[in-house]
Image (cartoon, rainbow, N blue to C red; front, top):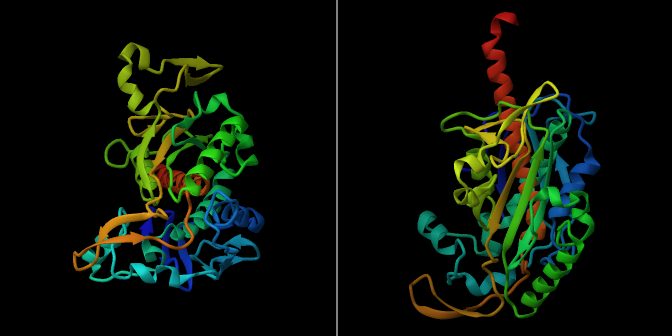
Length: 364
């Protein structure tokens, strides 16, 4: 499945060491002004080689739009785009053509398809997420018109984590350090840990948190189209994502109902809640409060040290990986989490608007 979304849809294509990564965006509202500087900024936040904490692969990651845009605005037709790959070192993967890398998709891909592209993981590479960041940037531009904003940040690396929720931090400081953590002191600790792990040829994981503000009441469906389920699905399609929780998540089980319930009150003529344990979603539908969630990312599977494994014939061997790899995905995962959240919220916003129009068709 290479297509994401219902009304606002992205179909991506390309491999890590192929000619390029691209996509087709369908369902984008016509007349949206494309801020090219903003779109490129979003790609720059994801691209490799941006700091010593990321892979040293050098790519400009400049997007080229092929269709669906006229005089700087979307036309409502499919938006085709491509980002050309320019800095592949495919020979780095010659030693794994007949070997399965531990915890990679090598074995599952070859078993499923009968063959695989070993260069950088081929289609399973996180480089595919460039297409998501392009679509996510456009979705953000549309959502901005409706007053909806999305901010993600690194909240944990290894055992080093932020205390408290997003309200305890100035999230505007997130981009002030390469870790993308809004707490400068914790960011320094996280950076030191990543560098230490990298020096040993190892990797480390952690958590990205995200808050979505300005979401109207009513997005989501009560059964199989729950908004939190859609967000969970979106996040778990990201490479290395291993867990998702929204609101109080797993901690919700520690409370009694009387403690956990979000009490309604009349806030100057508007219905609101005094707390937000629900994370902005109740019954699978947004309730107008901030939506917040966390995504857990595993340590990168490629470690630059010897590990036992097997060949494609099942013969036991030892592999020492080569190439350029991230010691920690979190800094570059932050914009990807935002992109997937933006696409999901816009998709459900458009679905809700379609249902509203259908329900009031006699007035059109």
